[in-house]
Length: 319
Ligand SMILES: [Zn+2]
Ligand SMILES: [Zn+2]
Image 1 (cartoon, rainbow, N blue to C red):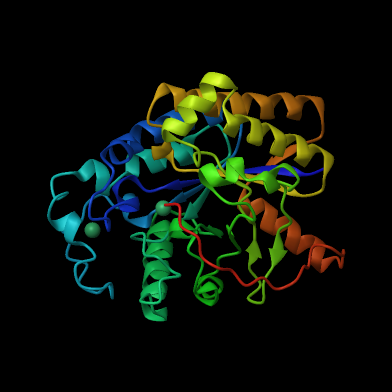
Image 2: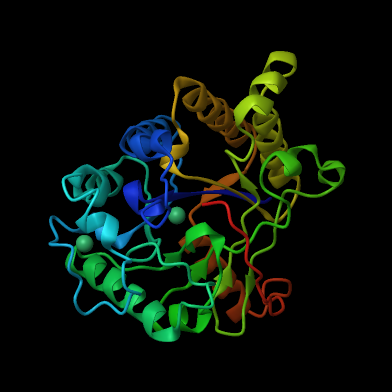
């Protein structure tokens, strides 16, 4: 029997602060989507991995970040356009919501300030500074960081993760995100279930299976007027595949993808299908950290199939 993992890239303004024109509807939906997801995950008792941008766990900040080796201008939006937007730069109230939820969520890291690790301009020193600050703030909260999600799934500096005690990261999905993925003829035959593997640094790669909001805009509206939501169909298929396999169906999203009630409805329908399959079968829900623990245990016990090979990761971008 396989399992299902849900991970969320929780970032408020930090997911967009480096963009010349941050998309207003996504930026302004971060808090709303975060609260809706907390409620839904509690309602369906689904423990998820919340990969939080470390800066959100601060109470305040002067925007200087003097000791941070980020390139010049990296914190410009925090100091400038968003200087009076504390709701986009901080979210200790929301992070507390994750820790106090009924569902047993995992607090994971999404860096300190959403630096892209796979960018050639991100050197080891910058990657280490992001991990250093993120793990330090977590420790101040009495939390440790076992799992890590790369901003825009841009995998890099895996050795630095290992150095800072991280056990698991979310690797790139084998299927393409977005509209092309949904209409990709190969997706019909391709499994949505993945096999977590240990890399050469001892990290467990828990690859993404499906980005739940990769099918939006006019194409979604047309498709939904003819069929049911195609993303819901894919998610149901992934959950059903997990029931029949030993692998992991790993779906992910940003809280800020929930920009309207239609998006909430998609999540409710997916979680309700998951609830049904859990009640009928032995299907489990795991956090990324729990997957890593399980893989390590079976590896130590010498069970084949868990050790896996080395996987080099390319980069992909989808926020
Ligand atoms: Zn700051
Ligand atoms: Zn992000």
